[in-house]
Structures are given as structure tokens and as C-alpha cells.
Amino acid sequence: MSDESNKENSLQSSWAAHELFALGLTLVLAVSVVGKYGKESQPVSLTTERDEARAAKRAELAAADAEALNNFATVDAERKFYRLPIVNAMSATVAKMNAEPGGFHNNLVARSESAAGLAVATNDTDLSDPKLISEGKILWQTKICFTCHQVDPAIPAPAGLALGAPKFIGDFWGKEREVHKGLGGPIEKVLMDESYFIESVRKPADRVVKGALAPMPPTVPINDEELMGLLAYVKSLSTAEQKK
Image: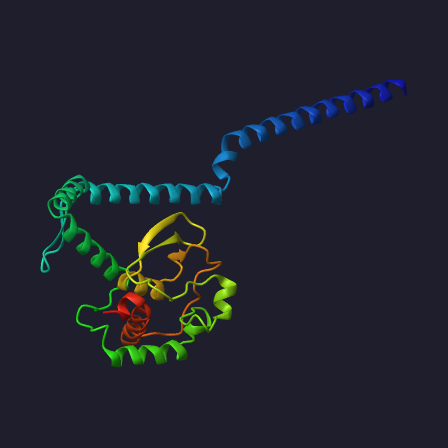
């Protein structure tokens, strides 16, 4: 009986040893497989893919910019538009500006206004025409300009008083005025003339008169003919213009 019991215990110990060995071997194989193939089977991070795509796009744009800034090219052969390297273009611009500063400045302003959608043909418009001034005066009321801009010393503009809007009283046309470049931006001086008036109507937030609490809100739709009428009327209010 004792021999059979010892034999049975020996067999159980042997099986236990085999099971432990098999379990250990399985764990070793599992670790080996994971170590070898685990990284290859893991999905690529979406963030990594996006970052790589953005970096590639930035590099592509930078290369295109460098190509455009440093090489000659034909932009439009029919219209004879050509591109110069930036160094050549700047040198030509400075040379032309030094040769004829006044004409260059006027041409540059005209081209900038045209590109910004501010250009309005004023050269052929007689701003002293009484009929045009009269039409502008009517528009001044219908476009509710009078609510903010005072034109008569005896009749205040309540909204204008609250907002600090500029008044068109006295000798103001052709005079310098201080404005902010944007609301609260740096101060600069501008001339109260046709170009400034048109810009103020078309893009009121670009320059805000010093002392105003806010830029002029977007106006009701005004076409070029109406704008000429308003321009003629406001210009006629200046005392210097009235003496002519």
C-alpha cells in the first residue's frame, strides 16, 4: 500500500513539473512573438499621419514660394504680365520711385485702391455741380448719415455725440486729421480728401477717427453714383469750398 502511494505521488510530481515547464515555454514563446511582431501590427497614430501630411504640405508651399520669389516667369503672355525675382522687382521699384516720386506715389495709390475695390472715377465728376450736391443732400437724409455726423452747428447728431463721430462743420476739407489704423490701432495722419472719404464709406473699419468710440457701422447699400453725390455734398459743407 505504501509503495503504491509513493508511486502515485511520484507520478503527480512528474506531471506537475511537465505542466510548469509547458507553461513556462508558452510564456517565453508568447513574449517572443509579441516582441517580434507586436510593433508591426500596431496601427499608425492618426495624429502622426496628420502631422506628416501637414509638414509635407508646408514644405511644398515653401518650395513654391521660393520658386515664385526668386525666378523669372510669364504670368500672362497675352497681357504681357511677367514675374521678376523679388530682389529685381524691389530694385526697379526704388529706382522708379526716386526718379519720379510724385507720379509713382499717385500711381501706387490708384492701383492699391483699384485692387481693394475702392476706386471710383472722380476725375470726370464735377463735385461742385449744384445738382449733384442737391442729390447728395437728399441721400444724406435717406441713408441716415445725419444720425451720426453733424453738419449744422444748431442741429446736433445724438448718435454722433455718443459715439464721438466726426463732424463736417467749418474748414475741414483738405485738412489733416488724426486716425487710428483700425479701432485702437496706431495713430497716423490722413488728408480729408476724395480718396479718404471714399475709403471711409467703403471700408470704415480700416481707419477710425481719433476720439471715436467705434468705427462707422456698415452702411446701407451705396452705389458709385450715390457715393459721388454724398462726396459732393460733404465737400460743399467745408467753409473753404463755400468761398470758391
